[in-house]
Image (cartoon, rainbow, N blue to C red; front, side):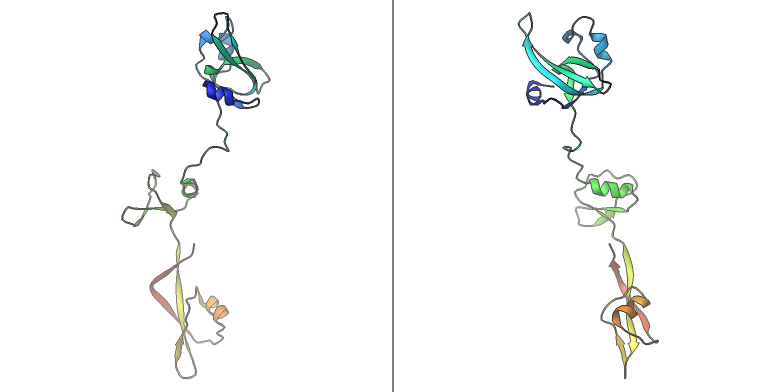
Length: 185
C-alpha cells in the first residue's frame, strides 16, 4: 500500500496481509506472530502515523481478523482488497457464460463473416454472438372457389397455419420456403 492509498483508507475497509512481510518493519519478537497472518484478510480497525525515535515517519494500520485477533502492520505489508462490486466484468462476460452453459458461439471476422469459435476460444475478437437457431417455415396452398390460393405468411406447422389463418378446410398443400429458414432466437 502506498501513502495515497493509506490516506484514502477508511475504518472497516478490507485489507490483505502480503505473503512476504518485511522483518525490519516489526518490533523484535513480533515477526513470527506477524507471519501467521500472511495472506489473511481482515478489517481496518485503526490507522495512524508517527515519528519514530530515529525521526523517521512510521505509518501503521491495525487490522482485526475473522478469528477476532488483532495485529498492527506497516502499510508496506498490506494491500487493499478489491471490492467485488467495483470490478469491471470482462467485456464478453455474458457470451463467455453462455459458452460455458453449452451455447454455440460465433465471432465476427474482419471480413464480416460469422465463424464458430471452437472448443477453446481465446475471446480476442471484438464481437461475439450466440449462434442463431433457425427453423423451417412453410407457406400453404389451399383450394378456393375456382383456383388454388397461397398463403401470404409463413407458418411453423399445420396447426399454426390453421389457428392463425382461420382456414378450416381439410385439403391443403405445404410449400417449403426454398432456402429460407427463419431465425427463432
